[in-house]
Image (cartoon, rainbow, N blue to C red):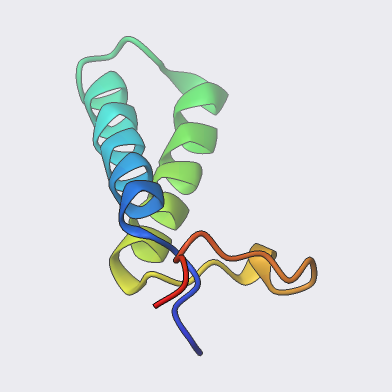
Length: 67
């Protein structure tokens, strides 16, 4: 599993996960929408923390940049 996410991509994903958590915790989003945002937020958080997005693989994408 080679990292394929850059810093900006990771920060955006983690920020969205935090936003989704706040929306759910405050009751702004409830029901099925809350479940969908919860799962999506969990995926964003995990992929942001480990810097790897499995959906990038089939398309050969990377936001990491060249070093």
